[in-house]
Length: 203
Image 1 (cartoon, rainbow, N blue to C red):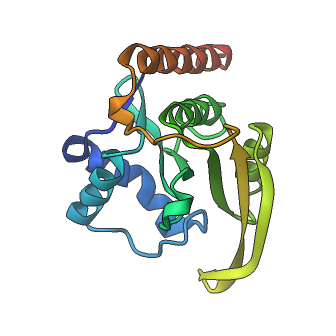
Image 2: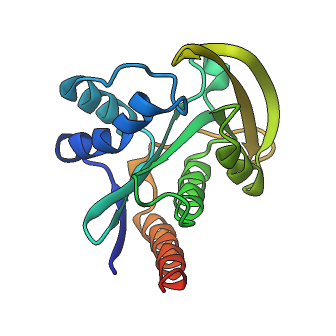
């Protein structure tokens, strides 16, 4: 079984990413997006994020098993050292222990870029995601009850944060300006961990 993690190519990968994301829009309150974006609009969204942030794809035997990315948590200049993270796994790849290594890689790359505070905004009923974040060192810092209306009812959200650096912040580096060797080493470590998890779950 082959495991590969790579950066997304918006033109080549946007349709595959959207195919993973669309069921979350159509069937769940994991995202508060209510309509599946058009192909061109979604490709532009991916491209805009990937210019400066990691947009990671996890492929298993050539199939897109999931993806993880980050974007600015808020727009004011004083927030520039904050990033908000997201991860989505394809149907058939959930509950297999694959999310944590991919998410840890995303966090490591953001730390290498110079980000300080990593945030996640999670639907309050998504206990599994909240537990994953808390296991990875995130702490709840805010709760907004009944703040999003989807599928005929209100949903709350929980904000979690993990601080990955201390002291005065430095300049933020675009992800593609990071040292190639360090990035490749971090990716290889995540690939090995995912491979080991897949192997351990074989019958």
